[in-house]
Structure formats: structure tokens, C-alpha cells
Amino acid sequence: INDIKLHKIKCKQEIIICETCNKSYKLKNKFNHNCGIICVLCQQRINDSKDKLLHLITTCKERRAICNYCGIFRSCNDMEQHRKYCGSRSEKCEKCLQYVSLMNMEPHLQSNCQWFNNNQLSSKDIVQTKLQSLDLNNPYIDQQLFNDNDNDNDNDN
Image (cartoon, rainbow, N blue to C red; front, side):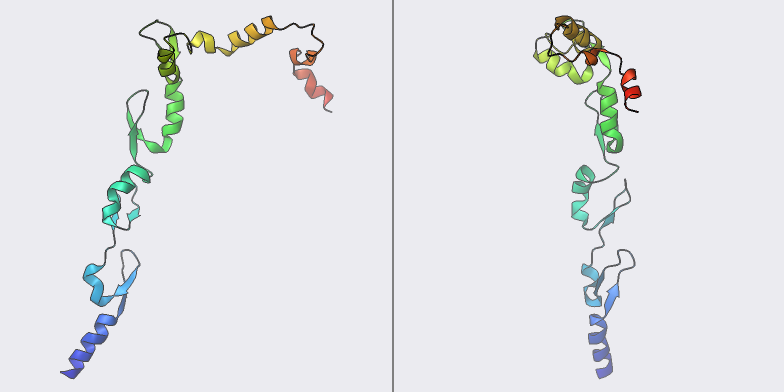
């Protein structure tokens, strides 16, 4: 009988390594051991099952969100790239009927349709307007800025 008691005491103190999470614990704590859970989206182990929701909305690599521009539910992996593409699309403003990129629609509407339409933001129009306003005979303006840049490469050699 003493051998059995001694065995139970020693056995409870035995260190076990969990096959699931590779953490060690005493055999007497077997029922208190928590391996956590596996995320159903990214297959990553979440140490504490209480943190499942937090993981899903903050750190899960496969979490999903809704695009501000098209309203489609997408993976967050490529959301930044998708929003750049999706936000650059143009639609007609419902108030002024001018084309405005989706990423500029909110400030366009906030400006009472005065700013951010595609005609104003066209780089070609802006450059032409600025060039027309410059005095090209001004000695402080570097005239080489208005020449073709192809010649600059030949001078570097």
C-alpha cells in the first residue's frame, strides 16, 4: 500500500509535455492545462480560447473586412492594394454630375462640389495651367527644366 501512495505522489509530480502545444506541465495539473484553440481562418494556435475574438478582429492574417468603396467583404491580406485600385475608380457625383474618384468623393461633397473633381485633379491640366502662368523669360527659372530629359542622360557619360 505504501508503494501505491508513493507512486501516486511521484506520478502527480511527473512533468508531461503536451503533444498538441508542446508546453510542459505537471501531471496533477492535466485537467487545468489549456492548449488554446486553432484559428479556423489562419490555422494559427491561439494560446487562450478567450482570445479567439480578439485574434479574429486584430491579428488574424485571414481576417476579413468590407471595402469602403465597393462594399465587398474581402480578406485583409490585400485590402490596402484593393482600396487603392477601387478608390481610384471614378463615378458621377449625384449633386453636380461631374466625375470624381471614389477616394475623393467625400471631400468633394464636403466642399459643396467645388473641389476634387477629375478635371481639376488631372495632372496634364495642372501642368498646362502652371506653365501658362510662368514667365519663361524670368532669369531665376532654370530653362533646362523645360527641355527634354533625354539629353540629360547623354551628358552624364
